[in-house]
Image (cartoon, rainbow over all chains, first blue to last red; front, side, top):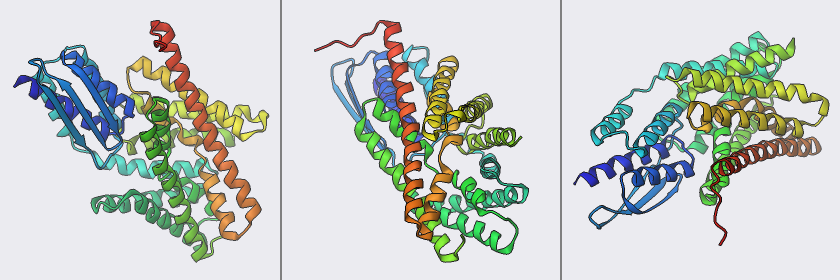
Length: 250
Length: 151
């Protein structure tokens, strides 16, 4: 009975790792190390970006098999760090079952600080506009677009719209605001505003992760993430392009 | 002067991104990640004499990912945290914009040129990450003398 509770906790950790954007080899390696830390044998793990399966032999010789599905993955680097520490402690057998359960419960009960994310959108949009050569008024417009994008993306995430359509709509909105601001005459160059705010949508993470998956030898996961990244980049380009064509902002 | 403003903007911008990626408690990681990104951009600017954006991006990204791996060893945190934040100044955002602009304006030659250069920059960033991660893996194997068996 104790074994099953331990495995339940381990499965939960694997699920959280996958959900918060860990590389595939990290998920597989962590699960394997934790299970062998508790002395299970015949451990086999297989993971892809939205699913993993774990099979092993319990101490009394019965086979065990479980799998978890995680449909909506979300980058959460704080949790990734905590989980990494947790996995290291568990595989060194420094924690009891109740401590592990407490840690997991603790992690799941944490509330997301939406204000900080909101500030992050504004700061990064405004600052990357400056980075691409914008002046003060362009910076302010970028910050405003960042504020709008945060709200739009939040609403679309609540409605569970898929990431490609989400990026398409968001990039259309940012291009519209930038071009309109130029037409009104608030800003002189729309280029820095569009490129700066576009950085929020760019799938830099997806590309990095897909490459790290490919290095780890997980070609299936690497390719699926790569295709996601390419589709998102294409949808940014299409969204901005459509609005430039309609509004004639050149 | 312009370069200093750019580096400062890159630092604060990267710091903003750490909030979006939900680094809310471990602020030192946010700080180090942004610093790595800024160092990467400084390297990109310093290597301007090479006069080749692909080579510049490659060298800068190589430095970023090696620094990220070093920091990951130091703080016992996943290297992804630092790479994700640090790669932002090098991402070819303006390349995407100009590619689209030329496509909309119907300038097919300029479109092809900027499309290929955007693709090339992405490729050199990818290659840099590939090389640094592999180098780290090899280093670890040699250090632990944990050689793979040949079958």
